[in-house]
Every structure is written in structure tokens, then in C-alpha cells.
Length: 476
Image: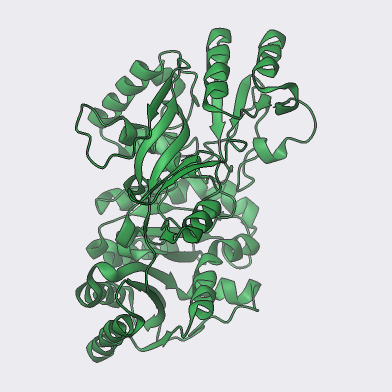
């Protein structure tokens, strides 16, 4: 492998081929569950350098693992423990190439931090609506590779819906230039949508053309106390009726999830914390392009109807953007607070909105009967049917031992229930390495066969992120 490392140094420059020192930031996953060992961390600065690196690795028979901000939650962007894989970091490729105001698009390189896209769009007078808790660290390439969702999917869709084109390096080291920014291009298979969500197993995304939107004139946020999850679904229906396309986000949070924020982040003032009459709270946002008065009137009409129908028992409306940001900060702090409480079993599931209350009631009861004292951290994007249905060890239990001893059983119980209710075990986090065996169990044989055929056809050497999404032996 010495010859390969020398080739890589010649391609990207010796300072950008890392083989020694502390490589934890590249080799350890975001949740600190696994640590791999790379042959080398290679940091290209252009699509051509990526292509040359891929060609060199293909010739040497060395597999590659593309990586953006390494904020993934399914162990899909770190090397394995063999010490033979090249970790391809896209972080140096972070330029905003172009903003086309008339076309409402922005073309950016894959290593561009999501928050940078948001801020660059705002300076140009536009909105880039993708928003995640990790937006200060994650990259747009990683968002595309996992088809990230976030808090504004209700109105703007997942990352796939925000992308008009890609630049991709194939497993053969060729560059596909597809960043034209066309909204209509019906010329064969949609390669863009195939690559988005493929988690680096079919090619390396090096740049993308993303949609921009006019900056809303008004944005209003409310926090509502709810008697039950059924009432949350009722409120969502009222929000669609009263706000229409103006409904930007609709989050739901269980009281235990919020209690962890109150416990570990007492500086955050959580509305209605501990209110026994409100086992759930909702966070709603409306965006309006007419006026703040118009938006507020629609919001007030919604809340008035919700109070009359009994699906909301109390509510607060942010008076300004600072208060709105504070409310969103509480919601986004739940994963951090849960981590402070101890290791936990995470689930990123999607179910038809109408079936979520029944799923939660049945699965809550099942888990509590199987594991007495287990604590359920239920929150997420109710507006698009995506729950982060997480399981915490009993209060006096050993969190590390709980994760070790109970994870497989808990996952089986939860994912079997998800399948029973017609849902998906991965809504926005992807499959990675963590859920490969779950994909094999819960995906139909026909779908698995089609995916294997695609993998074999595009990456016959199986050098692109092997062992992720599909098993190596099944793709080779």
C-alpha cells in the first residue's frame, strides 16, 4: 500500500494525506459508538482530484469511504477496522460556486457546511430552508448522501426535494457533471435521485445545485400544550386547514424528552414543563410572504379553533425572532440532553401520521412490559410522520450495560411494530453499517434485488463504501 499512498500524495499534496497523529475526528463516528482505522485520510480540493484518487484506489483494489462533516448517526462515514480503506474527506471542497438569482439556485461544493449555505443565501436575500440540529457541522454532501430531513420538511421537503442537480465522481473515476439547475429534464433515468440517499455507495457527490426561495416576510412560532398524541394529530390537521402552504414546521415532544432538557440544561426555560395535563407539546411555525399581520391573524385563528376543539390546553406565541429561536433551541437540545442522561437506543422511524398515536400506545406498552422501568424519549417531526422514538435505560440502571444487553431486543420489538404499522425503520438517518441487517429483514426481496443489481452495475469492484446499505458479499 506504500505505492498507493505515494500516488495519493502526488495527487492532492503530501500535507493532505494523513496517516499519522490523532485521526479521531475522521475515524470515530458522531455518537462515539465505533472507531475505525484508515489506511490514509485523503483531503482533495477539486472534483478532478477526487476522480484521480478514485482511479488510484480502484487500480490498487482499495476501497474508499466518502466523508463530509462526519455527523451521521448510522455509522456510515468512518472506515472499518482493517486499516486498508481510504477515508475521502470532502471538507476542503467548501466553495459556493454560484448563486443564480433569476433561477433561484445556488451551486455549492459538497464540503460546504450547511449553516454556510443558509447564511450565504440570506445575505443574497434568499432562504435555503434545510435546517438540522447539526447544521453548524454537517455538510451539504453528507445531507445529500443521506437525504437528510430536518425541521421544515412539511413545506420544503427532504434534501432530495431541494436539489436540482449533482456533480458526481463515479466508482471508475469519471466525473458526471449534472449541475445545470434545470427543473425539467426528462431524458432517461433520474441519476440525481439515484445518487441522493445512496450514502456514498454508488459514487462521490462533489457538488450540487440547490433550490433557493424568497425570504419570508413573516415567521411566527408557537408552543402548544396537548392532552394526548391524538390531539397532536388533530392540531396538525387544523394547522394544514388554517395555514395551508404557510405551515413550515410541526414538531411534537413528549414530556419525558422535555424533562431531560430541563434537567441537564436548566438555563433553558421549557414551556409547560411537568404539566401532567399535557403529556405532549407541539412546536409550530408559519412562514408568510404577505405581512406579519396576515400571518398572525391566521395563527390566532388556528389557536382559537384548537382551544375550542380541546386539542390545545395552553399555548405561547413567540413575540419576536429571538423568542422563536429560543423555542427551537429547546427542541433541538433534546438529543444533547438525552446524551447527557446516558447511552440510549435511538430509532429514526416514519409512519403515516394517522397511525402514529396507535403505534406509540401499542409500542410503549410492549416495551414497558418487556423491560420494566424503561424510559421512552419520544419526539420528532410529526408534520411528516418522522419520530425519533428513543429508549433510555431505567433510571437506576447502567446505561452502558443496557445498550449492550438490550439493544438488539429493543430494536427488534420497535422495528417489528413499525413494519406492522406500515412504516419505515429509517426516515432520515440512513442505513449506514448500523442497520444493514435490518434492511435485509424489512425490505422486500424484490427491492433488495433491484438495489443489488444497481450496486453491481455501477460499482462492480465494490470499492465505494462497502458494507454500508448493502453487504459486501451481496454486492460483489
